[in-house]
Length: 175
Image (tube, rainbow, N blue to C red; front, side, top):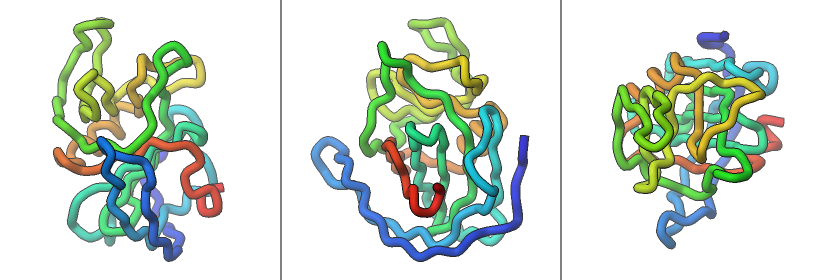
């Protein structure tokens, strides 16, 4: 497990997420610095490095295709994690979602599964939360990240921050 890399890669991008939140377009945001971690992370790996990042609201992007989650603040990538997501019977929804609520310790009433450091994205129970991240696991529509990363994300993200769940995020930058 990686805990952070000081190296950053600079790029200048102005992005507009086209996915709707209840019919409204997602806000544009600029990304000018990304973490240089040498490629996609393996299952269970993550990086977190806030050094030099400005204060402000988080923007979280989940790339289902790459099985990665990216966290930005003030245009600077501060975190990246491998993920698990919903299987074909209970897929993870795509689109742009505000964080509706947070709960540090939660157990799913429906499945009896622990969901530590939950960030709720939908009223139907889809969340980003701590999980064992392995190629053999899937969720019931949620986004699972390593628990240590989930704790860092939980501390950094606020209710109202935006989460974009998509496929093929910035392939020209992240490969």
